[in-house]
Length: 224
Image: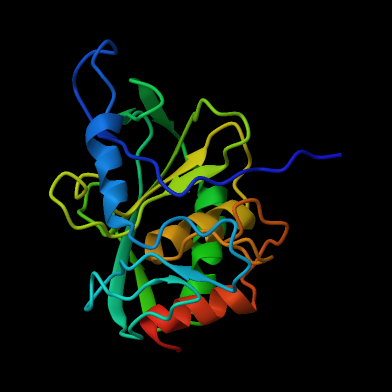
């Protein structure tokens, strides 16, 4: 029997140029969690959970939480890029992580997977070069937790959180799958974990958007 791949809501990381012995980022960046006023809804058997953070207007928004609709306001364009191989990162779990290559085949798959969100909600993705500033950065790196498939970070507002918003890191030891990519992009767009069987379940058994996911993302950005 295959073991389940678990999904974490956030990975707080950023590029750095110091040595491995430096302290991790968790004490500072974990305080970004205090902004997540809705809490983690992993045990709530609801169709969706809104964090209260989004791209475009109405960021942050309130109320938010389990089965609480967002403002329904569009994000005109959300830019994204693929992170280059060899970028050195620091995370709460390790003081040294290095991004690995995302192949052209994997990039094509990721583009297809994230388009599930833009096909149902009033958002549009635009890809930019790896050295451009973007709303979302997608990379692959070793995550020192065997069953963690990836991490994604929503649009937090505090200055120290701005270092990490929009990051998606995929576990380099696992294949790139729709289940992981769609789930992590859901976090970045503003959806939290739910207990119901949607892609935003903390350990989903589905590979694509489900009715609860669609209702949640449309509540935040409006429908296509």
